[in-house]
Image (cartoon, rainbow, N blue to C red; front, side):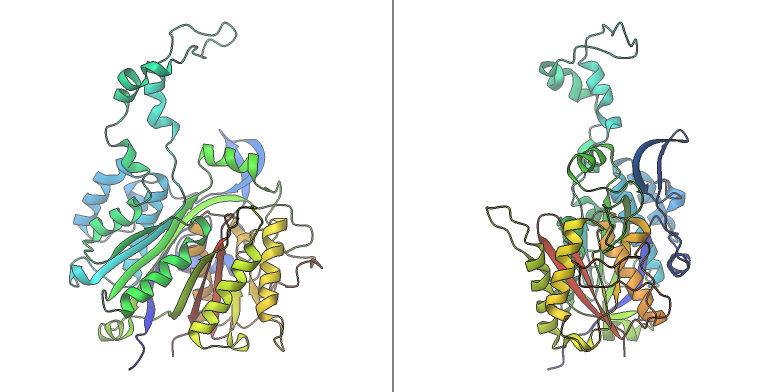
Length: 438
């Protein structure tokens, strides 16, 4: 019995780099990073740099739409979409257009979606009127703009009633998949994954199994995330290792990551279905894996779990380490994460005759949260098509404690296959193995 083959037929992204695939590719080739100071009213207000999609404002003009009915649905739904959801929907529109899939072209029951995200937080704009309603009208003598005396006991009767009735729909983590399914009339399998940065492997791995089982012909997969929400930024500044300059994956002098946001989407399709409609094929998904290692001692288990998913995709694919063209690393740029990942890669690939080429895309735009996985995956698919790796930005000095060396040139072959690694702080990791179609 022949194995069902699943291929990539469309891609889309919202990224701190240019969001068209061609311009995204050009930025990677030309080493144009997207990290900039955090500005407020034109002035730098923090020593923490950021990376944001400067041209995406969440307006209907930002969505690549070619169907009037879809445009009406999205325009109506924007008021109940958080920024993460807006980016997810926008990237999915791009991916479906790139795959040349139109609304109503295929039976809706054969089309599904699996989308990953971070946790999504309410913004101040949604609660400010309710907070004001529960405050004493007296004001600070030192600051007339400061209202004193918030009374929480009044919240249920006076505060909550000031909020938009559907406000909570903007922040549910199942809403990216829900909006995408509604807008495109997808009635097939649907799922929402919340593994933060590790989400991409779960979305892709599960969707490959869904297509292989005959439950769908096409799955729209992707991830979305933002580390730039004010409360998320505050959490990160308090708890995470953030650089004050630039993200330097695996470099000896790395000192933290950069906060960013973005989303990416890919169209996965059963091979025969794609060929019958004459679709362009960008790569073949061999398999995906996602696992966790947790214990009550709170020991960092990232090395173990990354090694586990790497071994699993090799075993399931029947491929040897020597057959993998390159690895698209997580490459967070922090001391502990890069150290654990480098050791795990060396555990699995250290005995190769020739060191495996590595790509670390976060040097260009830092950590986009869950959105990183799909955006970085698109980068390596484009590298396969180009047959050359993109350089790793900001790597200059090897670290003796990290037995890996990311590629810094523009002339390293991508090989015929790659593995994408993604891992989150909770020691959940995923890996995806993709091969050039032949």
